[in-house]
Structures are given as C-alpha cells and as structure tokens.
Image (cartoon, rainbow, N blue to C red; front, side):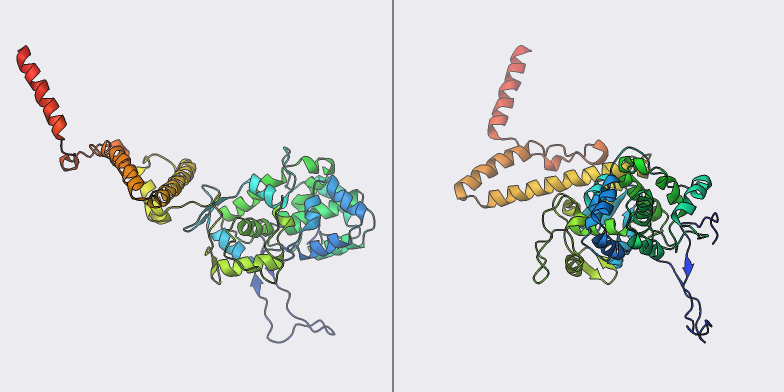
Amino acid sequence: MARGDHQSDNDDFMDVPRQNRATGHRKDGDEKKKHTRNRASQERLTSLTDEFTDDQKGAAVEMGMQVLMDVRCKNLVNPVCDWLGEIYDPASREFVIPGCGRLPLDEEFVFCTLGVPHGEIKVSYEVNNKIEGMLFPRLFPGLESVPNPTFLADSLQAMTTHGEVFKMKLLMYLISVVFAPTTSLCPSSKCFPILEKLKDVKKMNWCKFIADFLHDAFSNKMYQKGCRLHLMLMYVDCLNLSTVDFTGIGGPPPAHKFVVSAWTYDVVKAVLAVDRVTDMKYGKLQLMAKHAIDYSVFGGPQNFGKWMDVHSAPSCPTEARAPVEHLIGQFASGMTDLLGKLVEGWTSLNGSDKDAVARQFTTFVAERTHRPTGCRGRCDYNSSQELPDTQDELDGDAALNKDDDDDM
C-alpha cells in the first residue's frame, strides 16, 4: 500500500500463504485464510524497554510515558478480553458482570491501570495528509508505506539516539500495540498529527483517548480493537483474590499505584484460571467490595432489571436510566450489607438483649404497616394488615366520645 492510501482501522487481513523458500511458489493445497484479530502485544515492548538506554527512558519520561517503561505482564489472555467486550453495556459505559457488579470504562480506571498522561489536550488521532507527508520521510526514509509494528520495533531497537525521531517512533509504537491497536497489519496513519505535537504529548488526555477508542469499538461490536492490556489488568485487579492460591508464582501482586507495574503474566493466569467458568466465559470470583453490587435483595441482576422496568417512567430513555440504575443498585447493595450486619449483630446477642432489640424493632415496623405503599407511590390499602387496637386505645377513644356527647 502506497503512502497516502490510508488504511481503515477496521481492515481485516489475509494470512500470507505458505511458500517454498527456494521458489517462492505457494504450496499445493494452501488457501488464504481470513482472520480478524487484535494486533496488541506488549511482549516486544517489554523486551525493548529492557534494552533502552537511560537517555531513551528519559525521553519516554518527557512524554509522560514512564510507567510503560516498566510493564511487568508480557502477554495477554485474549479470551477474557473477548468476554469483557461481549458483556460491555454501551449505554452505561460499564462492563456488566453477571451476579457480581459493574466496572466502568472511564478515564480514571485507565489512569489507575496504565498511568498514562491524563491532561486536558485532546489526542488528535485523525488523518492529515499534509502532516504525514512532512513527517514520513523523516521517520521512514526510503519506504513507500507505513511499516508494520515488527519493523518499527526493530528500528527502535537499532537506535542509539533519543531525540525527536526516537520519540515519534516510540509513540507510534505505543499507540499501535498498546493504546489503540486495530486489526490492520500496520500502524494507522492517524498517528501522524499526534507525532507532530511532541511537546504537548504529556499534556494530552491519553486516558480519555484509550477509553473512548474501546467504547466506540465495543459499541460497534468490534471486540478485537482497543487496549486489551487495560481490559485484562483492570479486570483482574478488581477481583477479590482471597481464594486464589499464589504458591510458586511469587505471591499476589504487591501494593501499587499503577496496575501495569504490579501484575505479572503468571499471576494473571493464576487468577483467571480460578475465575474461568468456561473456556470463553469468566466471572466465578467476586469483585472487591468497592466494585461489587449485591442484587440478592431483588433475586439477582435479571430480577433487578425487571424491577427497574416496572418502576421507571415510560418516557425515560435508556441513556438517562443507566446512571439511575447504577446508583439504585449501589444503594440497594449498601442496604443489603447493612441488613446483613444487623442480623449478624442481633443474632449474636444474649436472650434478654435480643428481646429488647426485637421489641424496639417491632415498634418501628408496626408504625409503618398500616398503609403499605406500592409501586409509583400508590397506597395499597388492606384492612387485614392493620394492627388491632390495644385496650388503652379503646378506653381513650371511649372517653373522647363521652366528651363529645357532653358538648352536644
């Protein structure tokens, strides 16, 4: 593909047929096989950064990419990334994990995972022929088209300098294999406008760019695009690891500021092995308490959805309902937790104390059982639910009636 013929980020590609190395002819029976897959892989990145000089690592720091110079997880577990794409809810921008809770796809989570710049300048990921024509000969002299990531990595590895060309190539490589990998064979030409603004890279909002790129891809059911490193590490870092055995792999991930600097591939695999339900489905482990939503009071997530259907205004659009649904779920989850603690504390009391609490609790409940309120605020009156009057109340009513008779 010649320079200027801009490839689509959605391009599928054809595997090159096997050829006889001597003749170059295709072997009999071989056919082109079409595959769509994400081009992300941080394995080469980790080997590159190990060989960078201090000056080259300093150049990465100048762009705000210092955290990515210490990526501990060298590979991806792709099935969990596929699964997360399938359970993503575009309306709420959340990963809805059945029976466990929800994880947001937002800037804050991306920052906590990758530690990339979270500035205020928009990342200009767009086609600009003029800028590309200006930068291309400087980056890839003698070439006619953008090279593939392997060529780009080889070029970086061979460099001994740490100036602008090094920074631009490193940034293009990070975009192509970590931040916004696509199904295309080559880095997107949309990278060039970003490279032209090297001085602003540290002030750009890379967190928003990564989150929005994933959101757009998943909204269009393109589950093979986007930052899989964030998906995988974000998910495992939010799981409750109390039941996972880390023997022989160095223990659980250490306390960390950024997830990418703490999780190794062996630890990720160990956790996902316990979390896996089937070969292509996960979610056996619970989320950490701060991320979990307990739907048990509604009988599970599906019944909660039905409850929301009944109580939501018919005119409420899905986009407006999503944040309300999330907050109500969190509130109900918190109340469920409080009720659980109430029961635990109550049942641990001795006989007399337990009876005293029961009397107070019965009084509180009794005052509110006269006129139970149904959905949408309607009063569902049922006389059979009224408590019988006590003798003191009857005597008081009789006295009032007598006074009324005397006044007449």
